[in-house]
Image 1: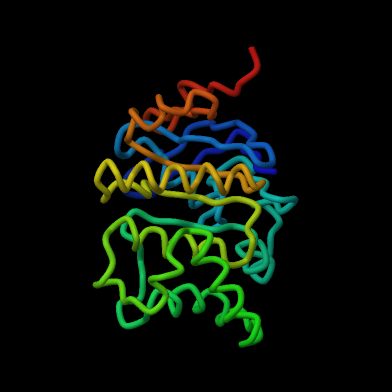
Image 2 (image 1 turned 30 degrees about the vertical axis):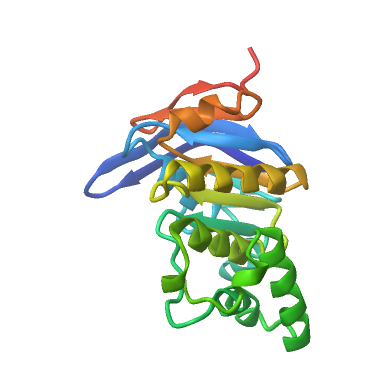
Length: 224
């Protein structure tokens, strides 16, 4: 489903961000990306999202190749990819329901279908009672749940998460992680970048890919 083939990513000012990265993530897999700040985790996620292209090598996502994909195809691919960020990125002047609805509105979904879908998504993340609350009225964990609901709007095949618990306390972190586990159990692949090694250790069945200065130094899913 996701494949990196000898991928290099270099930036003019900061230099090499990814160095000969090769791996494959299978359908419905749960994969942690670990490594120090600047190790290349966020760059790797952006390449999966086709927000950037490799300097060398090839990234394949759901049959789309980074070397051949066209601009209009990127928009179609991104409907299959949900993305959750550390800083939530919610619209402060919109309610929880309106934030989730926005992801459907921009793709032209029918208004009646949007209302039904939003209700289902908020219930899925445990926020049915907070549909009319604004982000300022929600806790950090609740705001992240809204962000997760928004990322799930189009039934993505994969959910990318870039330090999604970085701004949360331990209890909220555990809640978000359990939510991700339930989403994964329903068939959505999860690729989660995190510094939280306690969280990683608590889930020994999940795959771990560790990056160091852009190089994969450990992959628990790699065949020996």
